[in-house]
Amino acid sequence: MREAREGTALRERLARLRRDPVVVQTLRSAAAATIAYVIALRLSPEQAPLTAPLTALLVVQVTLYATLTNGIRRVNSVVAGVLVAIAFSLLVGLTWWSLALLIVASLAVGHLVRVDEYVPEVAISAMLVLGVTTVGDTAWARILETLIGAVVGLGFNLLLAPPVWVDEAGESLEGLARRLRQLMLRIGEEAAGRQPFEQAAARLHEARRLDHDIVEVDAALKQAEDSLRLNPRVRDSLLHRVVLRTGLDTLEICTVVLRVLARTLTDLAKEREPEPLFAKETGTVVDQLLSEIADAVVSFSVLVTTHVSSNADAAESRLSAELRTAAGTRDKLALLLREEAERETGHWQLHGAVLTEVNRILDELDTEHRSRRLLEELDRVSQEQRSRMPRLTRLRERMGVQEQLWRNRTGLGGRSR
Image 1 (cartoon, rainbow, N blue to C red):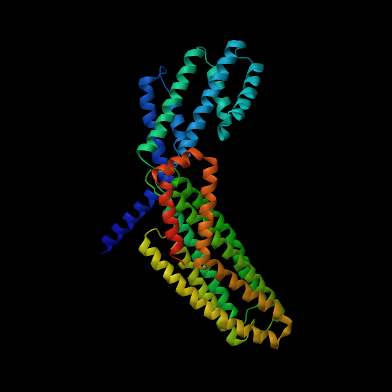
Image 2: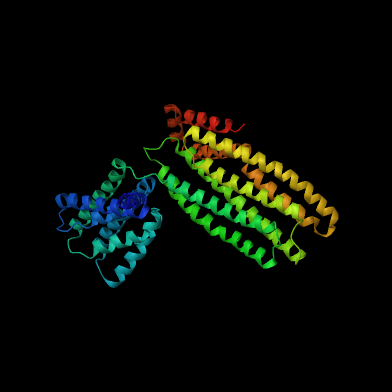
């Protein structure tokens, strides 16, 4: 039994390593660089054509979209540097002052041809070529090796499509939702009893620290969005990107509102100390409501990260049921808070703020609100693509891709109505 558990644990670790971006990037880059070097040994006149593996190493990225964009800029930067070096070798040769002019000219050319982060590579290529004796042969050999490395890097990702990082982004999104849930549960439990001001302030600081989690989820989501672009293994990549992005936006708004709620409870604890925040029955309902909202937040994240239609329908039904239950508890809390406001007129603003903030979270999680927002975002992104790439959009329309996206979009929006 112990050996079986150890074997299962080993397989799980290996599976995680296979999906780890660092491991995947290392193996793919090493393989592409080695293949480029082997090809360059046969085609380049240089004895050690290290420019080819260097180019492949820089070109191959985790996602196909990044590979294509980096490959084009990388080739442009090297070719521009070589051309600058040839011009300088014919005019002035290599001296200390010509080297300074070469660097200035190369950096200027790099910005002119818009190679972005590869601007220093223009100057590096120019200096390497200018520093050798047989300028003409080395220049063409360097261009050849650069093209070999770039072609190998691009072909490597075209033939062996890189992983799609949607699952990792979904796990990160669900992790944020679960941390949000845990904080809501703690706030609710403490609001039901006597909550000292220091304790309420500590919860406020926890809510503020969730901003760092949002930054990490956003980085994972950007990687997933890049992995979906131009990836032949993915259909409806735009739909996937928009669903995940709008899901993160909703959770971010819920996090901000929870932080405001924690601020309100902190102010209320300061005003009422050493008395409890609410009457016993009201505090119990507050605890119950935040618990129900916390469960709905997790269900929302599951809905956003679910790709299979049947599972998505089940997740949406569960979310709708939880939101209806929370709405009933919210109505009960509204009556109790009104009674407390009538008894203690000095705190009616804070009681009203508590109700307003839980209402805002419920509205953000509402399935109809999500559908409208999703449709609006799809329309906005589609219009941007149409204006930025009209020819590609017309081609997609002729191939039926846009029509399929519209059907999926309509079905996704219609499910919630």
